[in-house]
Amino acid sequence: QKEVEQDPGPLSVPEGAIVSLNCTYSNSAFQYFMWYRQYSRKGPELLMYTYSSGNKEDGRFTAQVDKSSKYISLFIRDSQPSDSATYLCAINTQGAQKLVFGQGTRLTINP
Amino acid sequence: SQTIHQWPATLVQPVGSPLSLECTVEGTSNPNLYWYRQAAGRGLQLLFYSVGIGQISSEVPQNLSASRPQDRQFILSSKKLLLSDSGFYLCAWSVTAGITYEQYFGPGTRLTVT
Image (cartoon, rainbow over all chains, first blue to last red):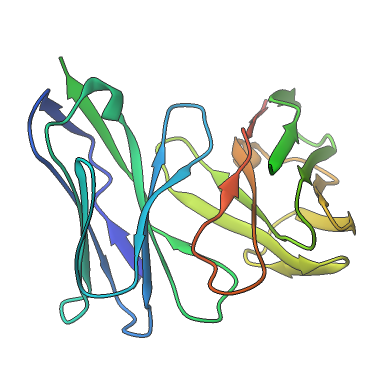
């Protein structure tokens, strides 16, 4: 069983839609949860991170963590064509020097 | 500010040829350094990471190797490339203090083995 599972998509939605991206993980020791965004032919960049169950908002983006279900989500409201990218979840344990990444979900927002 | 450089940006190499990809970081000291490979449509596969000069951890058995000859320099090498080595190679760095949750990625090298 992989440590992190992420639906690779691709996912295509119309502009303005609410997008939901999800990951599940297997190890309850994971404590830190990140979402990275990767535009085509570029390196990933950190979008959001959180370390507790619940929601964290940043503009149109909301990261949600449910540690009891080992489930993390990223919601994008009022999606824009500029949000078209691959989104990768990543997790970490305290003291670990490396992140565990999901496979990435390729998202396309259609104008 | 910190900057990470990778070169070359694109590379086409025949099977059996050697490989050397270089990554350098500016504006920070004693970073953690990472090499990833991303195959087409796939996620990030961690190949190597380093917490200091000469300290290399290998994550996946393969015909690749890594070296860290200087604090902010990380090199990925191969003596003989395989077709399966094709992919997008990314170097990244992170701070060593506190929790590692943010890694800063370079622009990547797109390698095609023919």
